[in-house]
Image 1 (cartoon, rainbow, N blue to C red):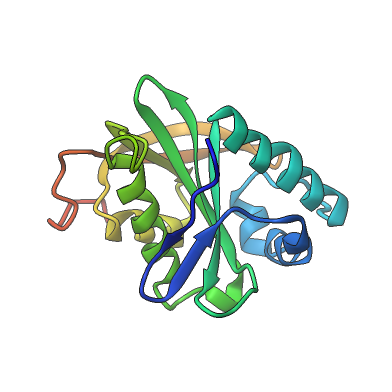
Image 2 (cartoon, one colour):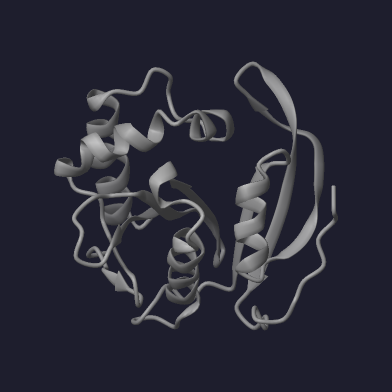
Length: 191
């Protein structure tokens, strides 16, 4: 598939480019990103270039992964990414990461909502997916808060469900179906 650019009131979502490598390094080395995502440690320019060229671009070409760089409209700096991956039978997983400079402003919620709309939109305007799921280490409260704001429905807690950085962690799972009313409040556990 040819790369797609999505726009919101405040953001431009486009495929990360090799020139974005330093911005990718900056957010990938954030302690919260390291704590909750499988980025290599240490993460330098070589890892960023590999990810941009061999993972992101190859994913778009193969139709196996669609990563969007998150930028403020009018600002070339890449603040983070939101992507769809793990495609199986009309379903995919959504994941996201943001530099601390972009947090606390609703930017990732806005970006991920645009990607969800595109994911569920019928072909050729979107991917025509039926289901998009989210998974995260249970302690990653900011990621869960975004998933809740996106209207994803909590589906469960996988005890010791993921091995990350040398130990097992509980993992939360939530999802949205194409026909879900994502504007309606959903019930999530408080702990």
